[in-house]
Image (cartoon, rainbow, N blue to C red; front, side, top):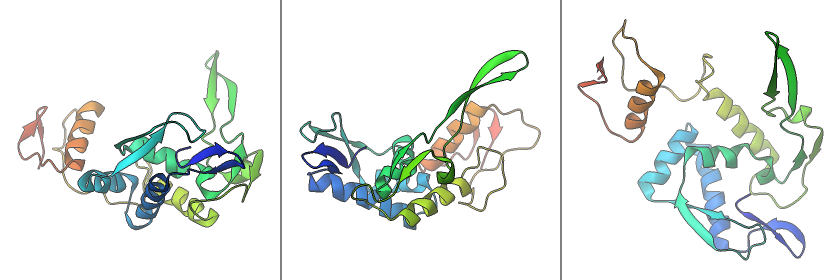
Length: 193
């Protein structure tokens, strides 16, 4: 996990102050922004680069890259940043569906269902309650599940009724909007504005 290394005393915070400061800054920024996408947008606007270290021993070179939403979700969803050691957060099982065996994964969001969960196992970047609040905020902002949410408002473009729109087309238009590019005419034959 970025921000931690295996040191002489075990699992400890990265010895590089700039790595620790950046991890803290991003975690703190999520508390004031309405969504993970807003944090990524802020990071891009400010030119913030996020650290990545290939090895976990603290001796490998730190690489600084633009913060992406998947990297941010890894950071926000990992209880290690709240000082917790966990095992078995994501369970897999085989289920029989329509005569076929399918492997399903539990998302591991509920700490009560984790087989091993040790709080205060190491130094933390955030409090346990902050981690839980972050998880609730992420769930509220999750519109891809098709659920009504109370999270970040979805403002901006509207699409003409009756249009047959693919998910890829919607994704492209959404990404352009998140980058601040306003589409005022037709894109993919969609009326947007």
